Amino acid sequence: MLAYIAWHRAAERVEPAAYERALELFHRSLARVPPSGFRGSIAYRVEEMPWRSGAAEPGYEDWYLVDSWSALGVLEEAAVARGHVSRHEAVAAMARHTIGAVYRLGEGHPRLQQARVGVWVAAAQGHRPPTLADLLADGMDREAAGLWRRCLGLGPAPEYCLLTPEVPAGVAAARLPQGWTSHAGERRAVWQA
Image (cartoon, rainbow, N blue to C red; front, side, top):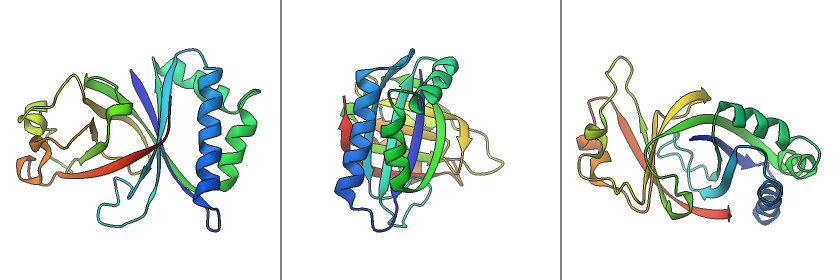
């Protein structure tokens, strides 16, 4: 399973309630008439973007689950085609900034509705990738959490994301290989199916 993630912010002078309503209407449109291979979506409000740890820049994080790379292409075309284009354009007209990435589910479950916490882990340059044991040795609950790895970055997206109901000890800074960083951020669903 793949997830296209879009991080975005409302433009200045756009009321958060209006932006969130437009965002909800777009996600509802996709849920009502889902493209082939589309497995659902969720939109979160986040207090900061995962690559800006410590810089309080709130925004939104949308997850679009698809079966395959082909389904991602179908989603991309469907989002701006008849049936969804007006809802997509309404959100785009209010947005100030958007960055995306594609992640692959490596372990666990894609239970986005249960994920109150996103733990983002970024690699240090020149270091070997950590093993799952390095990251999650103290026990990710594989029935309630999902470990995602970036497979296509369209901006400064971290290497890994663990979506979980609570932060596991395995991603604490002291547990990561030297030079790697982790950032845990709580999220609130604006839209979920």
